[in-house]
Image (cartoon, rainbow, N blue to C red):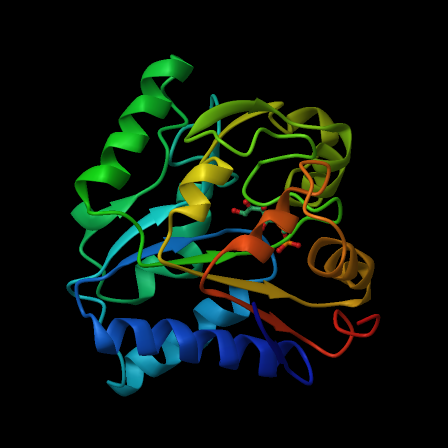
Length: 241
Ligand code: F6R
């Protein structure tokens, strides 16, 4: 595990974007695993800036996103498909046919998850997986006590995740209660993993997950065992280390 301490959110975003763009420069046809949430938005913004300057080219890149709500259409502004397009894909030269997000519109959970695992397999696995971390240690939608050995699967969201995601919806009742997510196994099989975390509300979980025991109660703690895991923190998230 490598920890990189940044000063603030902008610095964290720039450092994470540097690692992602190095990956794309070293392997232009790489597979990037991407995340939604507030934390990586600055990273995407920085990548867009460098793309506009001609410093990074996504024309051969394939992407696989971590997760998507179940029962939501792509064009729903709350879908992760929509989020990724509005925060990143619409502004760079990623080929639409190489963009993959679990199919939230497919209510057949088994089929949707199997299909997504097949996609990850077909593209040759993930070269670099970007992650955020939930206040309870979730990664993707792998909530506390998720099994470590699962691939893509359907999860019931916990009350705390529904609560945390309410900020993106008009009202709490609109937050879906289920999602399709890559499993811990899918994440651990990525050749490299990069996590970004910022803000004082992540300081406790960063300490627990990466300086405490590896346990399903804290899903992110398994990343301590990953052979190529980089954690980029701003000063607030690193404050308790
Ligand atoms: C996003 C995801 C989530 C978030 C986590 C942190 O695709 O799967 O695990 O990474 O909830 O979210 P933020 O960045 O909003 O604190």
